[in-house]
Length: 271
Image (cartoon, rainbow, N blue to C red):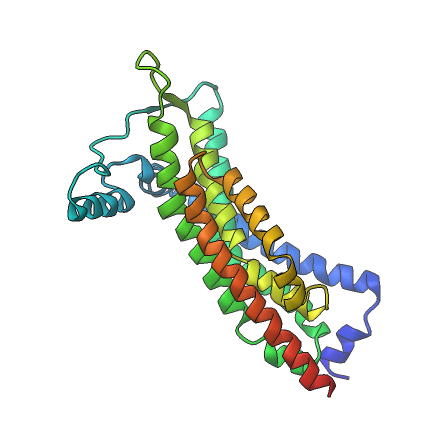
């Protein structure tokens, strides 16, 4: 009896035991990457986390060049006029642990998904396995694209808008370290997950939960939902919300195409 048949004949408790080992290996990899990130404190904090706070950050440099090309310097920043402040005794250590864990999750995401895919794959038919080739590559590609989009687009806009906003010249911005790091890490991780929309639609279409017709009929509802999500993970200005909404809308359209392809293949197989 081959391995595929063995997995299909496993009991529910045996499946749970198998899943536990996949999750355990994934957790070990995330912990290892988290430890590496913890030891690389200078790179993680000074260059990555606090990078969007520096006026020479690539996003600011690009906007300054674009502004100069158009004819002006409205988007050129000489400094980010706020300082970070730690108010708790254990605040910096807790943030060090939190950032290391998030970094471990981001770096280890491809392996974690690979382990999950190894658990799911034996339950698929052979033709489904063939049609799912490349799913790990595309999942990783979309996740990395989402993380980079969040870090290089949404985070700098959030830092500039929220960090420089003032109701009066009498008020000086001293941002709490926890607030700043939570914003950077949550936005970066959220956009990475948000970019997984086509992959989620692919699997939902496989099991028959989602169809191209359903996605088209609820397009308006999806747009409202995307706008709400963009409002949650971005600063309260229209430009940032539009910047998040546009790529997700494109991904939604791609998801309709993906669902249509899945449905078409299922019809060919069942014919």
